[in-house]
Length: 376
Image (cartoon, rainbow, N blue to C red):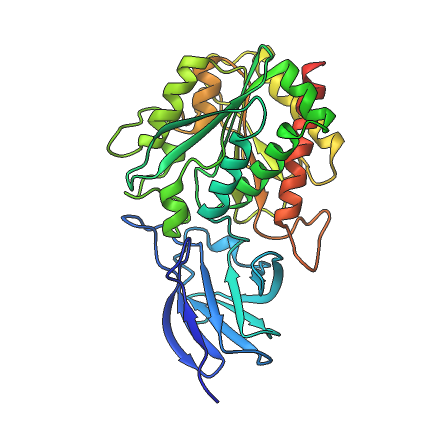
């Protein structure tokens, strides 16, 4: 029986082939450039129609988030449209930590990924479609280290200045699926939630803050290995031009409400992180966040508040992070939205686990919560 073939030399591809034997392979994840972060994988297997694939990704005990592997299922697609969950198991004692993926494809090509990829081609389609929508203004906000454009969209006539950023960490593709759902809502003239929000707010959106890391197949960093969500206090042109450009535009426009959209490797839930530890925090300032959080929890069963990150002690916030820097710098409510790579344990989906479709629906739910929050 012939050996399968494995390829990853494409947009967001990431895998190293250690060995192949028939329909079995031992693999490893390539770290981000100039960085030790590794967790994202995306590769293609061909020549395996009707054969059970046994794919072992090795050396994961030293991955970025080892707690992300237990109870996690890889994603698989044979048409690159529908992404399902492939049966996966993790053994930390095998080969310095091994994720074993088992799947029998019906066709000769199957794609596997850490989460459903959001390609740069799809990103450019999204930007072009939005830029062609009535009332939307496009701006090339800057250029990445690899020479890619940093895309920025603004629209709306209202006084409330809403900033939404996504995919600072490129392997957190949930964020751009969320952005696609939110932008579909906001640019659809028949969607009343979007129409009323555009009347009451002016939106500033950067759907992909890290095009270089996205195309390179990184988990967390840009082309030079910078974690953009740790660059917000002192961004520089040679290390973090993406953050420098975005924060500079924020200084021009001002910010009244901000959301930064992410994915979390270990926690099987959707949750928000805020800015408890920033200097000079007032009860009134923090209530602006907690009131939004309560509205979102009531509006969608996909969101919860029991699971999440530990809260920072007073005055101990990390101001190099987007949410805390924005909340401190502009004295406004800001938040980090986290979605899982695993399933959502409160409302599991055995076929897909957490999915692009649910990420998109959550985008609209977050906007509907924003509309209600404006009337609080």
